[in-house]
Length: 115
Length: 265
Ligand code: HEM
Ligand code: SF4
Ligand code: FES
Image (cartoon, rainbow over the protein chains, first blue to last red):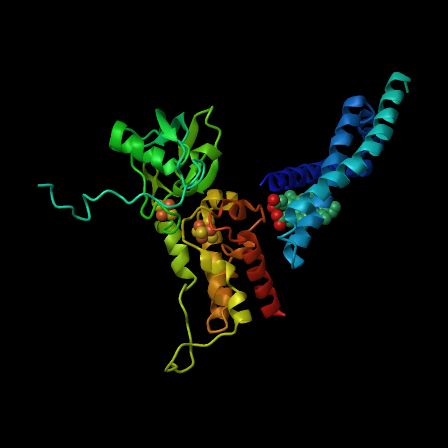
């Protein structure tokens, strides 16, 4: 149940991001100055945290998506779904911890470094 | 003259086997106080459902069904719920107990947290008629649509229709269904889309699709290849967790999905 709720929420989050992302990227064709301004606005810690949340959502959605594919197509998938969910969560932590350390260091050192 | 001893009046002969107090139910059964928090609904008085608490002393061997009986028989005779066998075989008393679908007759009070009120609600996704009683008609409608009966086009044999142990094993799990609706009413897809066939109908289709004696598997696969059929399943596993018979419901649905795909290629 909760893996499904998480999958749907992260799916919708990723979709909304892609929508915004396509819009801001297409700005470059309308007005390069406006594009630069908008992209520049992403360089603050709030956006940095938003990026971290986005990566967290994508990583969960991707790993759990593979789990759902295994449930659908692997004969023993339904039997091992719970073990696979733990695997997804562990893999998620393993990927997110180093990423967050690196990402947040960059985000906050840039902010306090005054770039 | 001493009265005539009959089978009823004669004292039991003393047992020749000495049992320690802790075996054979010789010991005292522990008691404890519980509060049932029941979702009440009576359209004759109000369109609103309300919670009502009932407190009582129960035994360690009692089930939620016994507590409901105690309420109905001793506190409030208007409390309405379904039950028949009281032993987990008829499927009448599926209800939402502490937020999970279970059979009231198979849920021991001692296995729940008795320090807090035990919530008892009707199963979700079906129209409530009164208190814990829901209208099961939409559920049985879907059940009927999958043709839950043997269809055999060969000529009728004089004796039974033979099947190997392996062929019988193929659909053994789904023969255990008692149509309690715990699975279907635990499914978030069914809650939002009452048209979805639901896990129980798919389980009962599986029962015949994989039966070597049956000839209507293709028809059932076609019925479940509908937009309200197996493809609505999002593999949340709520049904598998809810099933009081321990049927691997999600697995059965996955097997039907795969059978539909295999048939189309
Ligand atoms: C990284 C690669 C991806 C994988 C492996 C993946 C996998 C999956 C799978 C297997 C499903 C089916 C879930 C189900 O049957 O319940 C699904 C659903 C979904 N995905 Fe993805 N996906 C990926 C990327 C994306 C992206 C980029 C988006 C956003 C545009 C997205 C949005 C969604 C949405 C909204 C759902 C529906 C959720 C639901 O029905 O509950 N996914 N994904
Ligand atoms: S599959 Fe299990 S939960 Fe569903 S109706 Fe049958 S016995 Fe009840
Ligand atoms: S009363 Fe028959 S299953 Fe519970």
